[in-house]
Amino acid sequence: MRALGLVASYLIGAIPVGFLVARAAGGFDIRGKGSGTIGATNVLRTLGPVPAVLTLVGDVVKGYLAVRVAEVLGPEPAWGAAGALLAVVGNCWPVFLRFRGGKGVATALGAFLALVPRAVLPSAALWIVVVAIFRYVSLASIAAVLALPVGTFMLGYPRAALGAAVAASLVILWRHRENIRRLAAGKENRLGRRLPAA
Image 1: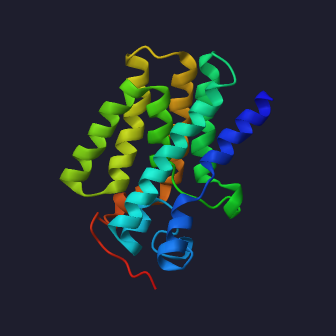
Image 2: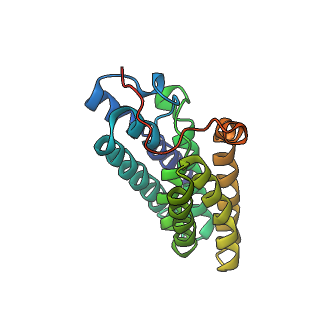
């Protein structure tokens, strides 16, 4: 039953919110547009703010729910930590889309809000500051996920939560490897650039 519970956390994380929103709002596969991912940033650039907000909220909520489902399995911190990591993995590699998903940032936000809320707040604040100054969502996301394990450690959360924060950050950094290359080359898109949906 516990194994099934962890599978449920992955499947919740794997719900392709951006894909479904794009299908409903634009009638196309978001993976064929813009960056090719199903995240809120790509939805924003192809469909505009309202679909992007729906995607963002949906991804945050599913991350939060995945942790709560995992925590039902037992009081030990490891269960919630496993649920958080599996939610991020599910978002990045969803079985429903043949493992071609998003980059895990919004889902991680929801998952770690459930798991280590005090550590998420400074990371979220850092994300906002970096976006406001540089207008690179990818750079802000990278900075935020690097800060998350630091905050988790400094605030004394359990080792299982720290392990999940480190692992999730590594997954998200890996998913941003192309963004890192473009940032280094000065070719990354800034927030606010609208891409054609068709």
